[in-house]
Length: 391
Image 1 (cartoon, rainbow, N blue to C red):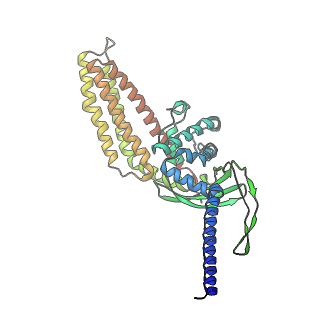
Image 2 (cartoon, helix red, strand yellow):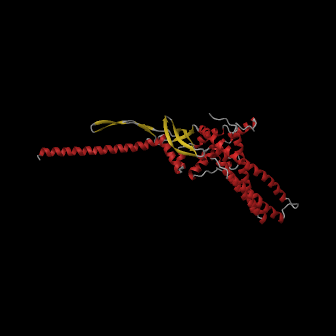
């Protein structure tokens, strides 16, 4: 090989190595640019925020979930949608009473929504639906918070997936596929997002040369502090209620009709049993004598408790439509608590146990709350039969 050929080969080899280095450098720059764009651009988009929110919801990460959902704003708007026609079709109310109820629900709006935020936070962390307690415990505000939550559908709505996100300048919209578990009605929920941070700066494009060709790096905008895209409104929550509620109302009405005879028959029996129970307790001395205590105990254990068990057994034989599951479970819980109250009462009077009598009184109060809730559901179901059919 002559000297000229050898030098030409060395030069060609050097050029190939230089081109390989430039190619590797270009790949590295492109990878670095992709990573940079991902963390400084894509992670600031509403689509990324929604995907992160869905992942946080499924993983039980409430702090990340709340970073992308303005629960306070959403619950206030949802509360208005939920209660807008709460008393509209109740023919038993006068116009004045209806106006008073509607104004009352406006007055307690903020407390109710704060409770809803707490309920959702707890559910995401624990996957358990619990009542917020405090002022919303029991009926301290004159409402049954548990019933309102059931009416909201929140406890039996499943998130399927994020479907689409569209960016519209300072706002964005997203759609989610959801399903109401009892009725199995699928629905597309639409929400509005806003970037609550909205502080950024621009990087202009720049030119550079690669392999002898001039290339331009595009400019873009990103936020130093990070975007804060949040859902601020559920656009069609009322539409979701209107799509699902008629089916659930029909399920509930059918179940109430199918159990009406059982409930009526045992109500008649318990009314008579109550009179007998009161008669057995009467004493000219102000307290029951030993033989009375025994007689009362035998009557409760031999008549009242078996009747409660028999009624529940008959109710359990009636098929329960999905939309009536809440009422059926309340009836079962009422029976359980009532029997426990009677058992504590018997222990109290036969063993002279003040503690057992206090327990019986506490359980009786729980029973009254459950029975009042059941009565409200039945009453509201009767009202719902007068609702106009949606087109």
